[in-house]
Image 1: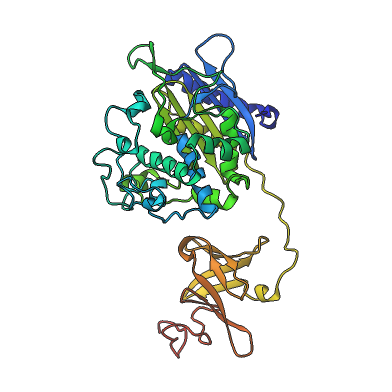
Image 2: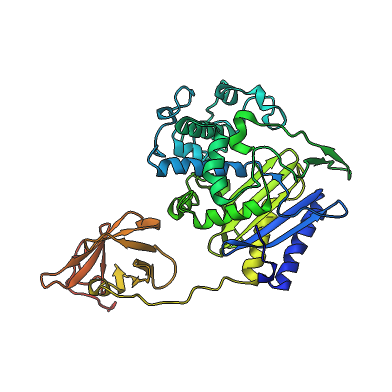
Length: 461
């Protein structure tokens, strides 16, 4: 991927370099490579290394661990979009004989199926995948630890099952489907299941001495869909742009947005920390910014892909050490640096090409009881309802073509907004999921539930 260094200001570029330099030095990692994406393209690349001479660039492969799960999730969503399965289907419907077939595909994607976090011993990340040739070897004798759908419990075997599901439905190996349906269409030519030159070696750094030990590079076998991939900052920058905008050759924008929405119940600690999980994507609220993406780790490697959709900025951070720097924190900081130093310039406001008089009749101020709301028609053809002061329920609504509107988000997602008219055709009030919105607080001329006191508004005397 060609980077456009000139599209960031010199001060921004120096701040980015400073952040990764601190991470590499304080984290004591042999090397750290990073990229920033803005407006769908890589705008900065940086690297720090302990080796004199040429440092790693956007073409050097690192192992990306669990970022692989996001690729597997995209493959599953493609099957759904092509009508080959439903996310609510039990696994057994498409992949029989696993012993956990009652869990749904959506639960596996969101890590809410109740499966164990790891496969049985020995530790799968540092042993050959040949030790676990069958799904039963990955799942073990007690694969289910929690009731399905009740809690988020991260599961590597769960994504092994999703990879097997892809193979069963497609009739081809996961690696082959991945290459044909994601890597080739998106131009991710330096992403692979096996390391390809140039690639970094994985290292363990002694916690109490500045000494290193090489880590083994194992083929994960059946566990590959959970963490096998190698990639570069160049390729992951392209992948980040795809996860922001979608690409109809792979997965459309609506389905990619679905992946970014919370799909797992949050633990109490998660609520405090502001983290949850979507469909193959981690979600966190950090420093007032909503971030999505995924982290990854395998012995010898740490990785993070982090996106702020609202800022249209993403960052990729890859390192070749088992522990040390925190790539997720570094990537979040890279996003913040760019977003704050060079805020996104909004598109010019443009008026509607035409406005339906029936829609124009609905806009303006409305009251739910005594709560004041404003209803606006926006250039994208939606209605937007929001409180006039303070916080409260807000939502956008899509026209249904029959005079009614359907809520798209929040409390009113899926709820019907219906204008109720008087005999003369004028709008009396809005019915929103049984809530009555009137032009005046408790308008006596509207059908307010419970009626309105005949004496009307009055003082205390």
